[in-house]
Amino acid sequence: MRRRGSLSAMLFRGTTDEPRRLRRFTIAAAAAVPLLLAGPARASILDFMSGAVMSEGMPKVPGDVNRDKPRSVLLNGFPLFVETGRTNKRVNEVLDFYQQRYQGGALKELAGKPVAVRRDGADTGTLMTVEVPDKATALQMMDGKRTLSSAGPLRMVYARRSGISTDYMAIWSDRAMPPTILQPVQSGDAPGQDVPGVPRPDGVRTMTFAEPKAGYLLVMYRVNQSPESALLSTASRIAASGGWIKDPQFSGAAEKRRQLVARFSQGVRDVVVTARQGKSGTQITYLARDLN
Image 1 (cartoon, rainbow, N blue to C red):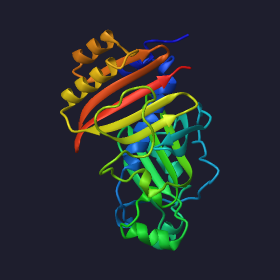
Image 2 (tube, rainbow, N blue to C red):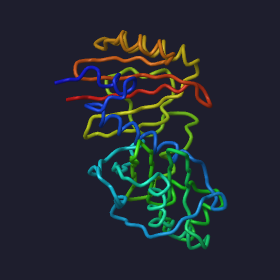
Image 3 (cartoon, rainbow, N blue to C red):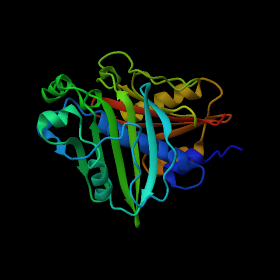
Image 4 (tube, rainbow, N blue to C red):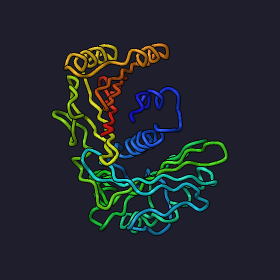
């Protein structure tokens, strides 16, 4: 049975029934993208850590009470693995735990200290490192000629405090990410895909994040319009394509909150379209799920 309110509930009410898996998916995207979009990094500006890498995956945090099984996702067509869990440890303790296990491979040997990117906050934190395979690659990274994400297999952690527990997400890859996956798009689309059967906006695709087994797909575009105009033209294009029905209740809720969001449905399919101002134009995001 289809739950027609699942996407709107996730966005506006934060319910914990059917949207729970979709919320984990969007959190995975939110956690991975800011870390991976970092430009060329030098060891001198990175934080340091110590430990040993487990190439077969990432270990659970001590005190974990809600570890999910690994899920396969695609970032611009590149395969990643995601696990979520919950522990009584605090955010900094979760990051410390992983810091003790991931050193940076040859980059650590070259720098003389374990290396990673870490960002700490009062209630959230992120950690990212790679296992650099050799000295030549490490030197390229330190000289700013290679991004951290393309230097070796990825290990990333996002942690968020919730009440007396900490929810965390571990994201990793089995191999280095090709530089073309996350290079800034100057012309033409980034690798990945559009939402099948949904008209795309008049712009350039900049990112795709998908969980094929669950049917989730998040696609971002850059358009040369104001956010208001971009959403209006994109929504009109979808509505005019035939078969996609706009949700007026959802739109009304978005307007009350002054959010530029629209939702469409077609049978068992949903797509939510959002618009916001970006650094270079407007960002249009499609968040879709196919319940087939």
